[in-house]
Length: 258
Image (cartoon, rainbow, N blue to C red):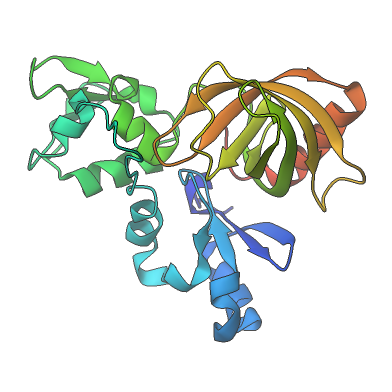
């Protein structure tokens, strides 16, 4: 029986098709079949990533570093940049004190901490010391880390998808967004910097994986500095929900709940 963790399972997006889950060996063979000249047009995703990464940036010998480095660049857009959060202040520190199930771990750098968190099935077992108050806190107390890894307390399994949303929002009469994740309970938009927590959207989801467009209403429950936006469904037909559940079951067997 394979002991490969869900985090090491990859999904491959090429020419409008999503394949997976694939372990490292199968992914390497699939990319060799596609050819080097097509790697810039091929994208990869696995649990822990908030965005599809170009296949040209993936290297099997350095996959952990490459994959999670892709989630660490969350720029601040606009002139009204917020003040530094506690987690952003932490980023200036050279090392982190971490416990797993109350057991001290070796001091680690931020990249090492990100890799550690990304590998965990349950981050609730991890505590991080607040460098200012010296109190031990759960991972969710550090927004910067949560945003970098796309962590959430969601109850439904999330899987990658190639889809598009078109419709309206409470602040925009003409909204178009690219969808990169879907679950029974909601969607994940990417490259969207206008939607904020509490905004509502209404429109249609189109994807080559669905026989026809799906009509939905949803509310924004997460908005990251990197452009990733998480939404929860507020209205969806039984037929549409069934189509999504079927898709999630097909592609979500090896990704684990996130």
